[in-house]
Image 1 (tube, rainbow, N blue to C red):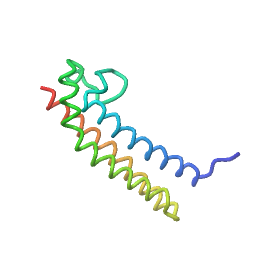
Image 2: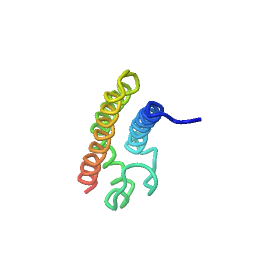
Image 3: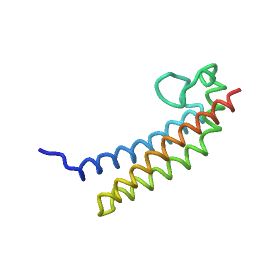
Length: 116
């Protein structure tokens, strides 16, 4: 079975959809205090890992930004999933990935600031 360019775009869109939904869920769990500080999932930095209070405060501060970022990435990826033109699909998925990456980087800064 050969994977075509359209198949690769579909897989990329699904990865972005699942990834953005998962990221939002993880940050929400950490903000509620359900998820303890760890080095594997969540926003991670030395400041956030200093204490459970810093972990929760950082994730709580980052949650609105992560929510907006994940919503934007989800909508862009969903649009990229259904568009009929390959180049338009690729452009939407690229924008979704850039939005997700940029939002997470900014959220990490917000979380670190709130953890102080």
